[in-house]
Length: 277
Image (cartoon, rainbow, N blue to C red):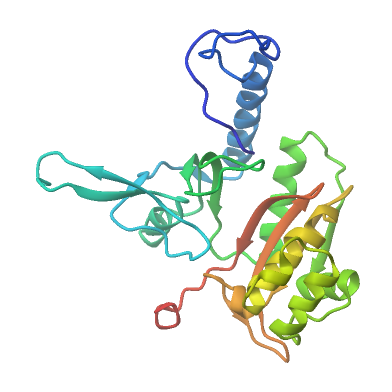
C-alpha cells in the first residue's frame, strides 16, 4: 500500500475544494482511518503467527546494491564528522533485518518508510510505506500462501482466488516468445511489433527488453479477478534469490499481482557467501 506524506493540520472529511489553502492535507479522515485499520489488522495477523515486529535504522553509510534502484543521499555534519559524512536513506530495510536474522531473531517483520530517488509517478512517491518480513526455513510455496492470506485479510476478500503462472509460460502464452531462448534483437522486434512507445530508439540488454515487455504488455492484464503469482524467473534476474538447477535453471522468486498492480515480491534467500561475492 502506498501512502503519500501527510502534512499537519485539520483533517477534512472529503476532498478539499479547489479554493482550499495550500497548507491543507490532500488526505481525508476516512483515508487515515482506513490506513489505521489496515495496520491494526496487519499487526494482529503477524502477532497471531508469532512473527516479531522490529524497527531498524533508516540511514546507512552504504547505498543500495540493486542497480535498478537509486538511493537518496543526505549528510551528517555533527561531532566526529567535521567535513560531513554522507549517509543514505534506505530503499528497503532488507540489510539491517538480515543482520537481526543472522543474530537469531527468528521470524520478523517491519512496516516503515523507504526512499527511492527518481521514482515519482502514479504508483508511488520517492517516500512511501513498505512491509517486509522474513520466514526462516520456509518453502517458496508456503511464503506465497502467507502472502495470499495477508492480502485476503487486508482487502477483506476472504474468497479471493489465487493463480500461479511461471515467467516462461506467461511470455509464451501472451506474447508467443520464450524468454529463456530469445536474443535481444528479437526482443526488440517484439517490442516494436507490440507498439511499445520508443522501442525503436532503445538499445537494451535481454533483461531490459523483457522488463519493458512485462511492464507495457503483460502487467496490465495480470491479477484480473484473482491474486496472481508469477514464479521461476530467469537466473539473470535472480538478484539475491537462489537458483534452482535443472534443464532450465530458474531463480526461486515470485511477484504477486492484483488488478494489474504488483503488490509484493519474495524469494528464497541466497546464503552462499562465495556466490554472493
